[in-house]
Length: 257
Image (tube, rainbow, N blue to C red; front, side):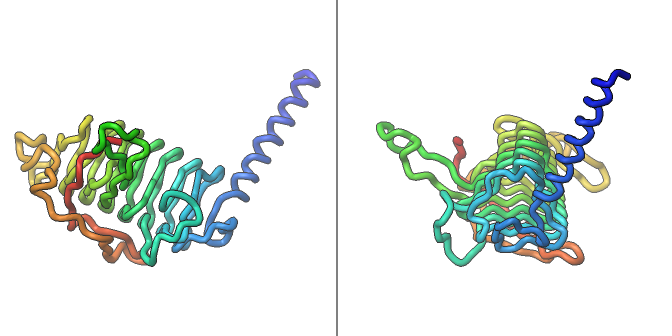
């Protein structure tokens, strides 16, 4: 190997070791909050470096042993410095994994259960723009909020979009790229644009398409749904306290964002 090759290899090794040290030092955890003041940051939780946009953290709870990937943005409210009241807005349960580049944008209530995993670039929000006035620019019309619940044990594939008013049950799979709005029962596979149930788990028969055993193929419309409720909490797995369970689910208004 030439001298130039030896030097390049040594410099490359130093750069990678240095970057690994920077990532370790820059990660946000209970032991290294890095100036963030979360409502709750559970033991063993970690926000990977580089950290995405984080604000309104006084209204954000992150459970024990949850890993937030690189460049994940989590926000509560319209912007920093706003008093959002006494109740937390974004609640992420214990032992979750949120994929890099994802966005969780809360304004009223987002409950993510325990052991929820997402792929990268997932978008979850409880607020949407409206277009009631056909003359006023849509971006200048006051947005509308509707709570979101994602049940424990669920998996959200890469690029999934969870719109306001969505209630996903326990142990559900959301396919990559799905645009999800409405109520979905426990043990569902949800896919498509707009998303619908494509598989349901039937005890004794396994995972079946709706026409072979699933009771509902489409999300429930608001007129059929349980009225939106406030944050719901349940006891999580041993050593954790998770946010909302999936027993209370309901549909919200039409999402357009």
